[in-house]
Image (cartoon, rainbow, N blue to C red; front, side):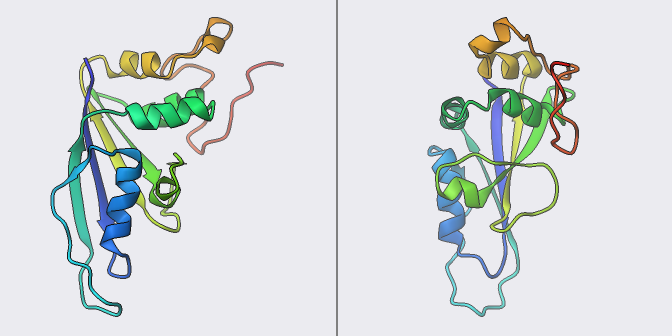
Length: 160
């Protein structure tokens, strides 16, 4: 069963809400934001605004990851915070604006981030299935295995 997908982001006072929403919808075309902030001229006195919403699937994101042949990296990044039927990870909004998927492991990059939360039963198994590729016939992978990248995003050595 597919997990529930929640997406949230913070729109800073200097950011154009339309571009922020467009960046998220570039990866999650069916995403529906909780609100549609008014565009104001800069400079403005607007406070930071958090918007969130749900998406129906990760199909578009997984397709991009598959096309770029980074499914093992995706498995590691999406499962780093997995526990109790839930996982969270961050994606770069700037990359999303041009149709790319870039995982953010720490800090806030130029252009900001979107936070993705997946909730569901057997989430680790679901992530393994969604990121499966034929190379896993030779080098099997699973959530949290010894081949996972480090918490800093550095690769582990697979072969001596």
